[in-house]
Image: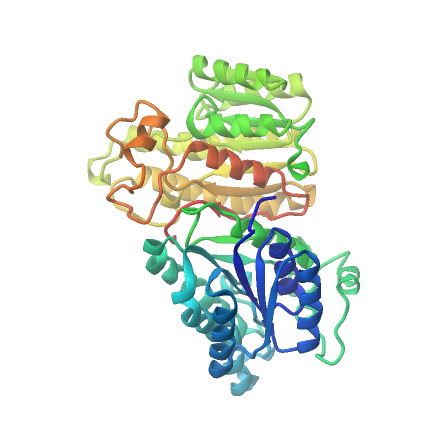
Length: 257
Length: 256
């Protein structure tokens, strides 16, 4: 499919789901990887899968809202690889799922911090180490382009990611760094399945649960995808030539956004 | 390349005589598709038809003005008579630029842009839709000008905005037939109809003028070879069934 050998890619939230599929897809094309998430056991599994492709894997346990932890991890990453060619800001999630009238202000704020501030923080911390001609891929969401209900923090945070990508594209083109949004649409992840963190449902079971129809808050014409489909799109985006699209959105959704 | 295997598929490319349309036709043919082409004049599409045949595929070339319903319908009937069905429809024919402020526009020139860019797309879809099977793809070449207002070319902007909305509406109407419909936004491409190149006699002359630099009106843009569009259309046309629909895929280098 193409060649990323000699490139260094960081995937945030890479322990499971879309992040893990993306990390493995990039490693499969030859990139050396850095992966962070909050869970060491998941990082160990990803590192093993990445190393099985012959690529190096640098890992760290990081809460993306913790500025000191992000800076420490990035310093270690730069120490290890000396630069980043591909940054995938994937870490995210919907924590507050109440209507605004009942929302918990702390959960609302934390949802914005994980999805939006985390994306900013990794970008800000690594920008001077991202190679000219590099790529930044922000995992956004259709929910950032269209309002729903009971997820206003996530809607607002992803809308922020969306416009952040555009702002950054305007600032970074002189360095030939291309930055685009990736909209996955519904994907069979533990986050999507609203799992309790103590009991994560396997991908195959989530796919089986939604094989006939997506959950009720999606239109019937959406399809719940395997995370590998998103990893494949992220790889395609990472493989665009220098001077490829920037400030754009690449979506696997099946509803107009 | 196994994922980009279009062997046995039938593709229709409008405005297929040169530039982006020619590149699209040849990319689809190289991936294995038979290709039907139309454009307003006969000579260029005949030549592209020969290039398709030289790749070992079947080709049909017809002179059709997509702004007119009846010729479009005849073309669609001829394609189905020859190839049996239409798996991939690429609405690429466009242009008809009336590059003037609205206050100086002529109703005829303004209308022409809408007829080619919007009605042309509608006509082709309307004429072909009954013969597009499940797993089919409709790809509309639209423009960033249809998403972002700029002064001086309202007919083209309005027509492309209409085509963009047509894509989105249609995706909601035909998803249950297993047909996906998406937009492609080329950004700046070296073709012989661009009005921003000094020497637009060929793709090569335009590329040469902008090698290593951007047009002054779009400093972040890169002037692309039409083949980059052929590659993108092939990628979208090769998506598995249940892939994206109602979406836009852009090669532009400016947020819209």
